[in-house]
Length: 181
Image 1 (cartoon, rainbow, N blue to C red):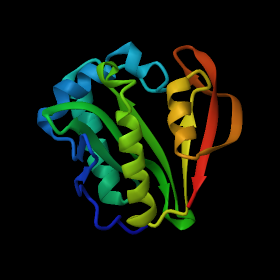
Image 2 (cartoon, rainbow, N blue to C red; image 1 turned 45 degrees about the horizontal axis):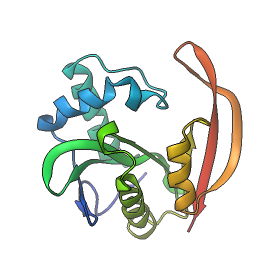
Image 3 (cartoon, rainbow, N blue to C red; image 1 turned 60 degrees about the vertical axis):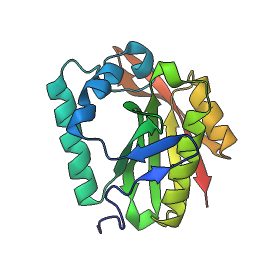
Image 4 (cartoon, rainbow, N blue to C red; image 1 turned 30 degrees about the vertical axis):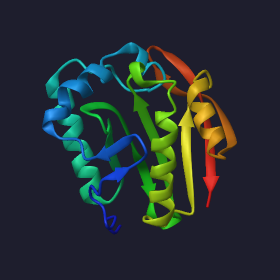
């Protein structure tokens, strides 16, 4: 699999946001989000417990980028250098010209249209720079905010997988949305 080009870590901008590589200095804010049950409610990953957890996550992101299997940006407002979220492509299938988009945003910044800006910019990058033919998103059925972001970006619901994920001691459903270029 070839490595993404011109990635890694070309900064992206929106009207209000800067999307850039996450660095060691961002790990305390990343821990704050990844240990917050409100942020992690619909993300089927364990709650983070330490800065060491975040260092392992950052290393995993860097390795994924180096292998060309995904890319990830930290989300920052242009007026404040504090990390407020993350967005990227995961489980990229270069042979199929397809990637899975995923994102999270600190609760203090939700409901302001910021994720809409970030998603639009990252989709543009995925279709133009990475030459994706399609992008998918896996969403918990109760995550109305994320479903709204996908709908506003013209994603179509393709599937409802029943009890396909085991998270927090229970089986949960997943909705799969996709957008074709």
